[in-house]
Image (tube, rainbow, N blue to C red; front, side):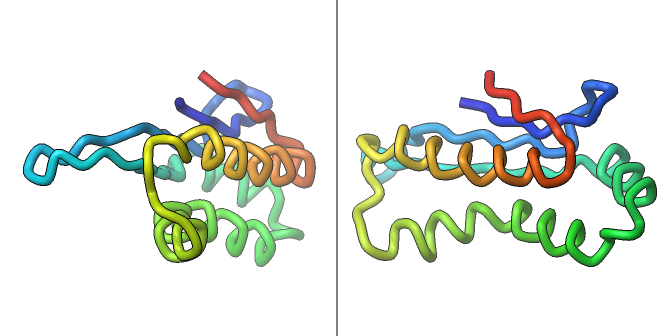
Length: 110
């Protein structure tokens, strides 16, 4: 599943992919996450909202570290199995919806 935060020009500021990965060596399947903050639209958004720059920088820094959050926090108390895919998607979706509301960005799933 791919999750996006987009601006009013429909440009992706954040692109997050969450999927089940199978390790060829161990034959183990687990949830994986890739998070990308798209530099040009993010930078334009930051410049247009400079009054909130510290909060925006902190928020999008956290978004760029979602893979670490997933492994170090979310899976600290449970096993990373394919059964957790939808739960991780739901958690990240909730985070992005809240950020979207706060900063006037659209949350899109694909």
